[in-house]
Image (cartoon, rainbow, N blue to C red; front, side):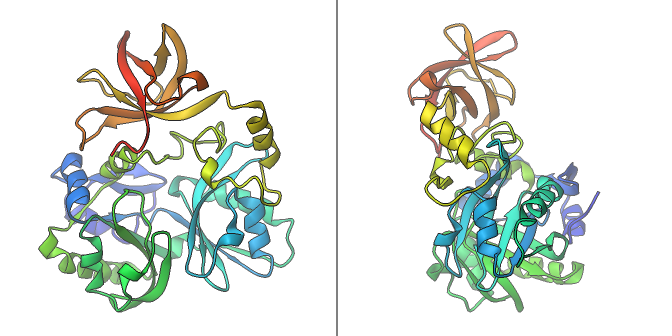
Length: 362
């Protein structure tokens, strides 16, 4: 198991360490997931997400390669812009969802931590068709912190001369932060205001950056946040989690990712399959739902029912800390995908009523 450069900090804070994506990572701290969730929604919290993967793409063929690899249209990116995208197999199944950063004379791909080796191997295979291309896995060299919440920018602004309010969402800047050169990105997976910072250096460097952020955020009650709250935060916003809501058996259109799938651009992996699926009409769709019964948590793989017939399966579910009710995501037959559709979740040999709703939940 690997450890990020913040491992000792997590241990000293009393973090509950669990295996995740090949790393020993904190799932929560002593005050618990619910407390951490509300800290991010009301103040500011810091996530160590250094387990994520980063690939640099350089060379004259970099853009053409990314266009072939991913479903979104990277030609629309300009330096300082980032893009949410996905890469697919030829059968349309999703290899991973990712971010594409236009860094001026190169691109950076940011992939899920659990998929780094698989993703890089897949990308290397696609790269074989391009002559002027360098694809470099720099994941082990990069520290990544996500600082999220309504007080995130107030905290971070103390540590940089870059005007953070001038950076639009899904944009970034190269700048000095806490005395180091970094990528300061207005991105995150909580639905809150915040930044993600990418920087290099060992344990000493990482510790100094962490301490600087916590000193700057002390007046706002800043706290460390674990993976548990990261999951409930993303679920309330209806954001997909690879391995739950999307994987190699799902394609972007049925996963509600049609908005990032640019069928009108040039050729890319899985394009013909998605065009055929769109022409034929989708047979299922990922939807959000809320429970109409108390004290039931919709768990992954629970059956989704309607009129006594199985129509799908839960992919993600939990109690929403903000709404205090069960919420979830799942694939259902298209006739039940419209908000307002009445469904039920099968658990403990019982059908519990639920309703399809428009996401985000919060």
